[in-house]
Length: 378
Ligand SMILES: Cc1cc2nc3c(=O)[nH]c(=O)nc-3n(C[C@H](O)[C@H](O)[C@H](O)COP(=O)(O)O)c2cc1C
Image 1 (cartoon, rainbow, N blue to C red):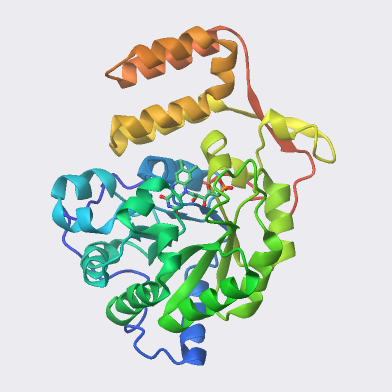
Image 2: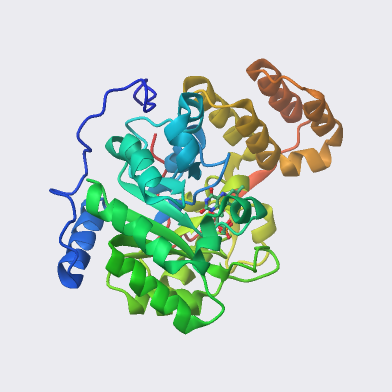
């Protein structure tokens, strides 16, 4: 693994290794889709992707997920205006390294010029600049971005066009569904016409915020896939590799994005599943000889090499060790009491968990489907 961490202010821009031969100025439908596909193929057609997650899909976690089968990843959403204005924000919130490819860098925005200025800073280090058109949170309503731009489609069009006409790398969009399928399909076609080269569809509407309460609508995702010519990715309802396989089959999309599941189980794309999903699955499951505590240690080592804000580390440790903390709640309390964290404290905490003699293994199906990555790459 290369030792250098890249951030936009400390490294001079180079030519993007996987950029289009020339900017995608010709936006006629056929040639645009052809170019989008050629690019996607050049990228190796990744099927298993780490979804964008604020404070959670940062460099060390992306690298951990990639080691265990993820074939591409999104950065957390970056705020385009703050990114253009504040060096500290750029340094802390966007880091990458050579192995961190293919990479989608996601921005939220409502001003095409500001978005372009932010995108230009990252384009040498990524494969797609992505626009967040799906965030349904109150903060997005206040900041006027994400899914709230669904009320202003001319603005969305101008954001996509601005990037498509001016960047070397292609633009992708992550969207939610409209309550009415026809509106969603019109929306998807509009994005494609505006120059979007890849569409990730989260199969829930803006009001369906709770992923546990509302199932993602794979039928609607399939309808989007059939309505456009550019590559499409699906997002929602992925708990283990059987879901990935079903989603790819039912929707016909090129790949799937996972968020929540990866937070508990960054090895999901290598075929590992948590105990919760073992009884439900067909066939026998075997101890995968991999434990969430092992993954925490691997993650912490990556964080030592590629530093990130402690709040991100704290968040991952809580999610990865959730099952352990249910058995050892006093250790969770101790972690919560640490206003300042250190690696020493965290490694020691994992040692104490292990010293209890308990194991919380991740499981593998003994007959792995052909979709499962056969082994982890280091
Ligand atoms: C902690 C967290 C942070 C998220 N941050 C973002 C984000 O920055 N940009 C985005 O488009 N979606 C974000 N999402 C939404 C996910 O990318 C994804 O669309 C959603 O969780 C549904 O996928 P899932 O069912 O696999 O969790 C976030 C989700 C979580 C759980």
